[in-house]
Image 1 (cartoon, rainbow, N blue to C red):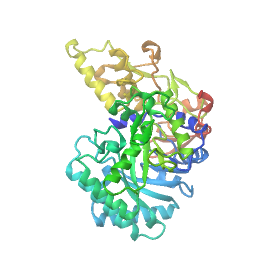
Image 2: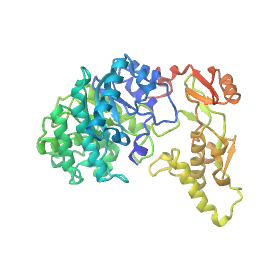
Image 3: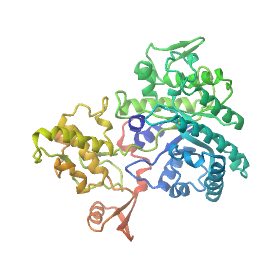
Image 4: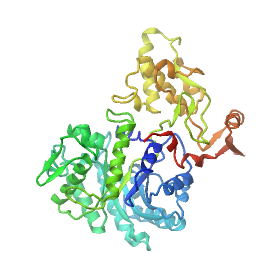
Length: 490
């Protein structure tokens, strides 16, 4: 659920904010590629560099992604995903992994990797997380940390850490000095901290400010750095005026209480969503990022650690949850080279031939299928579309699934309950039904794609493949400079 809620920050809003605030050297950005729009890795690197960002955390390290960062000079943090923990769950496997995937790859590609995150929130309470798996995670960070110093320079200087969410802390915290690790993870956390301490690695934490406000029943203004409400949290001689300082210093206290008071903390994920949550919209997201970037640029630190430089990575560069960007009623927002799919939508078909007694049950079943494989975040409680009618919810979910599957006719079947229409349903349901956009590199049969590209003036290079024609759409670099600033009012 956390991934569904947090990933609604769109990259164009983020960088529009960045352009008005100086980017501190210790501010980096996450790039996860679980997105409907497959942006070219080389363009991503150009975008990061052109916006003055010097650090990036990668959640995916496939060949095409890694090669794009060759010689860029960007300070990189890479990730061993939770599902890949089996690759490093023994000393022998970890040695092989480090030699092949770090020493060989980083050296050959001239990459400036400083940190590797081994596991992301492995102790967060989700389904099917077993005690055996959690022990494997603890062992993995130990094996990786032992393998790295045996590599040649500069690989042997890379620090291995593990990223954790604040739910590993006691849930009863009312002020930072109350903090400690909860009983479920305390022993494992101490083992991890010993490994980090021995190698000089930092503790990595992920923050979700909008969620923490609700968990603590704090008012919304406490989520922002320009909090002008009377609400503050007193903790001895320190006064807390925002949730970031509160959470960060809670981890500082937890480290102190377990004998690791001098350990550095880096914030590997921090973000504010624009939809899918009661506090999520463009205005609150922009307010948060402006305040956050100003704080980081001024090296303000926290009440417990004033004037301390904090390393932090904004989450996320693009919409990770396959969210549409910038299309409204089939019209293209001001960005040259971005090509939408044809004006076709999938909506609920009330005339479908199905037994009335079974209709509601089948509809709900198909609605669930659509949402499981697309993005229904906006329909959630607190989302911008949570006031739609029953039929509106069904149609929106059907269409998002249809667009996510590139308008394939079979993706609008839903046991006969869906139908394709060329009439924009946005007017009917008084909300924006998105159109899919053509990714920068896209496989398609000859004919329709070529017609779309030609009609819209995009440059296309067609090359034969064994399966279909691969059409490379050029001109997309205009997306990222200066990133739709002309379309946004700050």
